Length: 375
Image (cartoon, rainbow, N blue to C red; front, side):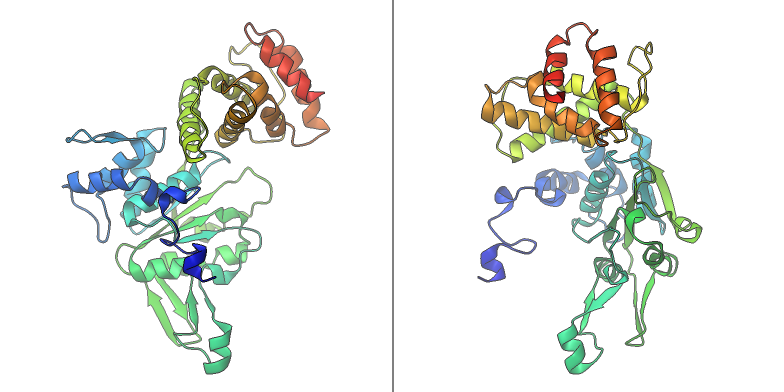
């Protein structure tokens, strides 16, 4: 079976409709095209849209021809404006925040709007090698002919430099510190030396880099001061209010439900609001009315986890229920999100159920469902 027949590679296969999760530039191609057609503002070199249009793409709006641009990020407008403006300068952008604050989501959509390609990506892990950021070698070519341009395998960062596009580095703080510092020369000198060939790759106009990082999760490596100085840091906050977070979860769950072909069912906004309320109270250590302090479990209980819980609940309701999202459909997902440490977190969860959920008006069904799965 060839690569084409197997559907591997960007742009190959059966088309966007068959892809489980299309890239942002594919999923929102119509919106990007409409923005490009309506955009008459100055654009930085090799940008597909002006900074104003990029911000509109992320925050949403209505174009003069009536085209509705759906919001990709729900949060303070100034944060998006600063992020977009940073990419229009020679400073790299670092999106910093606790897990689940849409750092990766914002990074992908920024790259899609600026360069039309969000796939120039380095995924940071504890095992990410230096070659993933700089370049590698085709060892068959290397052994047969020695170091040459043909034997060199460019990294996504090198490709972005040579093409004047936006590269992305996800989970920068999970990459070992010595590998992180590979970026210093790239970001300060805008060049990538290739000493084996006695050459260098210089960044062309339009190149920039977006990195995401968090410093509150386990297994992170602090950035050196030298590297941090090369970035303009934008902190993505958690949603300010319950309603804002409910809106984010509802929008994303609707998108995921359509991509997974889940049958559309009655509005489950009440259950979404209960999931979000539970997560916020356990995350903040106090109930929404400010009257009762509660212990916080070891997990992050992020907006992303709330989306996962509700999506799983919708799948249960669709395939094993009557299509109506109920407390029993989300109870097991909440338990899995809250209880990460079986010993300590289970005690915290049971205390929360008895002290808060049990006494809350209109939450009896939720209490019973959670007690049933908690054992």
